[in-house]
Image (cartoon, rainbow, N blue to C red; front, side, top):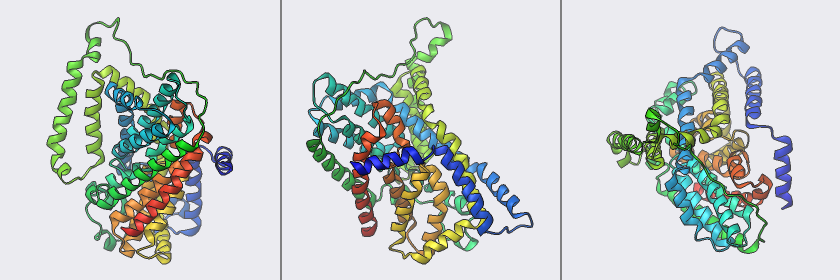
Length: 458
């Protein structure tokens, strides 16, 4: 455990907040662009870099992308706070007998939910871990609560290879690749880009499903073993509950917010339109951000049963996107500088010189894992690193779906090291980062081996 304590100390002492990191990366990008690139226009080079930065920050396509990613998190959180989802959690908790079986129940459930939606999985895992702790405490069941908390966070090591993964679902949109690469690649390379990359060849590919299954089984066996080997810990947990506003004292039109028929009618309408609009794409297993968010919006309203409960859940969930909201434009500014100054081309050429078609996915995996430590946002990372990955893959004839998934695997696995996304879980479970880190580091090591072998085999 000395290693995990050391890493926790390093993160706490030397790693600033994600926003500060984004600012420092912006300044570093300014310096690198100024000294290692030249302006292609008749303008002061520094002023040209400033222009690239400003244009990147307010890139309309990327701002739409940011909003889509934030909705995925918010709507996933809102779904977890509905009564039916609470019922699902309660039904799982009732099967807790000891640390080993509790760990397996939490890790399997969390990973399965996170594969569908990372925002849903993040909060679902946190609430499930908390409720398992409360149940064990109330029934006198000895439990290693930090291990259970770590299991509730394990969904973040599979999310980017799932249905809501930023890179796979974004490249499935018509025109996104060319929009991403228009200032990076030459016309010759742009003509080689497909209109889109369907999720049937990324998320729903046989290779990804097999890799996810192996990760799920292996981590389940690991936590079962750890549950047998670790000692129970003390717990002092009060009952955690989400409370919506009461309708007592309301009059007239105010009662519409609590109208179940109105909410159900509107929710069903959304799902009906969803089927009409997206059924052809669903049949092809091609999931896009708009499709996913539209479905979750309708489902969330139906599950909450009234607008007041739904909006109260939105109010609770929106706090988790505050940091992301303000960071995305900074990442887009970095991308604007890198793309327009020629930095992307220089870096991709470097990777091409040291890689082959077999090793590029491995380099992509490790570099994505490293970048994720400093840019703990899959969407922000795709905006910055995506052009590098695509350009390098084109030059080495690496299949684009494989390159996209290599980035996704690398990004998600170091979430087990980077504590940023664990903050909501830590707040709900009342655990500390250093308590779950010993277990999440083991998850990361085992998961990395599986992902690397998967990239080499497929």
